Amino acid sequence: MTYISNEELDNLHHIYRINLINSCSGYKSANLIGTKSSNGIENVAVFSSVTHIGSNPPMLGFFCRPTTVLRNTYENIKSTDYYTINHIYLPILEDAHHTSAKYDSQISEFDKTNLISEYKNEFKAPFVKGAPIQLAMEYVEEYNIKANDTILVIGKIIGLHVNDDLLEDDGFINLSKAQVATINGLDGYAIPGLNKRFDYQRPKL
Amino acid sequence: MTYISNEELDNLHHIYRINLINSCSGYKSANLIGTKSSNGIENVAVFSSVTHIGSNPPMLGFFCRPTTVLRNTYENIKSTDYYTINHIYLPILEDAHHTSAKYDSQISEFDKTNLISEYKNEFKAPFVKGAPIQLAMEYVEEYNIKANDTILVIGKIIGLHVNDDLLEDDGFINLSKAQVATINGLDGYAIPGLNKRFDYQRPKL
Image 1 (cartoon, chains in turn brown, orange):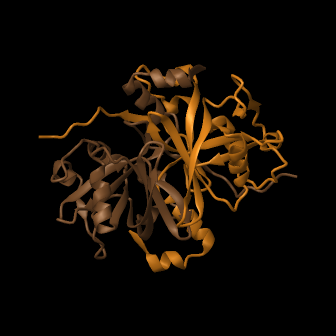
Image 2 (tube, helix red, strand yellow):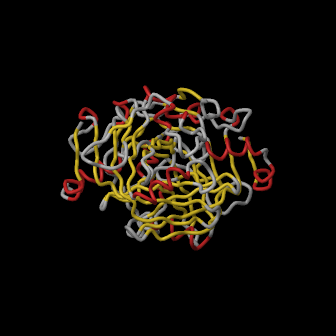
Image 3 (spheres, chains in turn blue, red):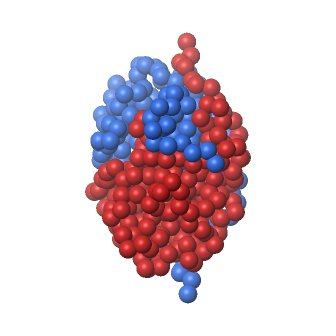
């Protein structure tokens, strides 16, 4: 195995380091977060840090950096309270990844890609049309991560749209049936097929 | 599409809800966190919430619930400051998932599965032998998530072991070459193959 020590990590070329550290934690979720600014400009951006926080109440979190373009998403959420989480799947891979480009806040990524915004049930933020899972989210709270000045944004799921054929009898959503993507590092995408579901585990005697 | 509203989410059967909400955020990382208690008992437990926090300094976070058996991991980290993050891959899928069983803190999951602990470079916490990526982690800080009383634990990567053949010239770790797993929901595992890496994206004119 290759071993990279603390000191070596500190001295890596920064491109090498961001590739290495972004891919060393394992596979990541692949989502598009949709928002609308208070003056009506839609935004959609790729995120790989959406994480389960709890089921009851149903809450998800994601991390954003105050110093990058992704701040458009954060600012829109702060000024409107609402956002959508949409799953990236095979047919939109290229356009989804393109939303990582640093567009000015006055430009909508919906206008620069083939991604299409969609409104449902009078929810104020735009969904990504065609996404097999679309979540309507309401801002709950945030935490400033002191160690590196990122922000953890926590939201509550207030509506869940899912393609009928993905939803199994016990509530399990079979992501592989919709060719949902997962992210390896900053720029690698995979489309997994479900390998196995296990039973609930109890201690062995 | 099936639509589940806020009110319907609140009234779901709890097993249905935990399956639904755990699988609605997309694919999750599949890691084993290794710790050792202050009185020398090893622990290893599956986590699906390890998330990239930042590359410089290199930091990862994960969420844990104070009320479940996973508290063994948290308590060991709090009392020793050190832990390991090891990637779940195809050959250890079943044993890795079994660590979700609620064992008493006096019992090591290494004794109840075929997982083998391994010590390297005098690092105090046990790695999982054979895991294609093994991270030596040091506790940095934690945040109490008020919305549902979970804890976000943030740690710094102070050493990184990676199988030579996964590491590409630009620092990218190709997880698919090691049959690294990703988690769908609570109990679904997939072994992705890499689909595509994209270039760095710049705004279109």
